[in-house]
Length: 105
Image 1: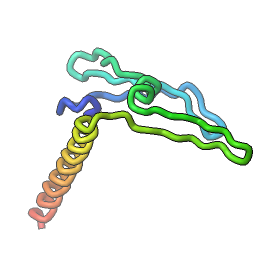
Image 2 (image 1 turned 90 degrees about the vertical axis):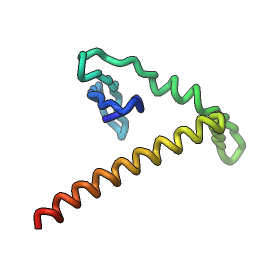
Image 3 (image 1 turned 135 degrees about the vertical axis):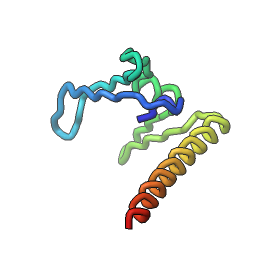
Image 4 (image 1 turned 90 degrees about the horizontal axis):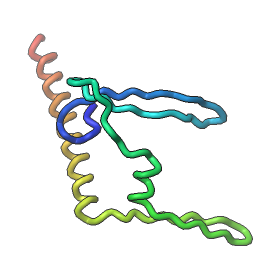
């Protein structure tokens, strides 16, 4: 799985510390498969704090949570393009597999 967007696959290790009442607590470790060193990744809290601003307003009859994405237009475009590249790579893979199957018939 390529989580670092460097076109190289990493090993992902999910460690579950506990579960219950619909929640799951755990950690994710990303390992470089060539040298088996763990890659430093940001925690989910760090990512959320960096990219999302939120505000909670309490009223007599309701609570409103407002969130705002604070990415630059360039960051948003980069994310969009990376998703499009991943989609195209998947389509290409599927078409190659289909061609192999059709070629056998």
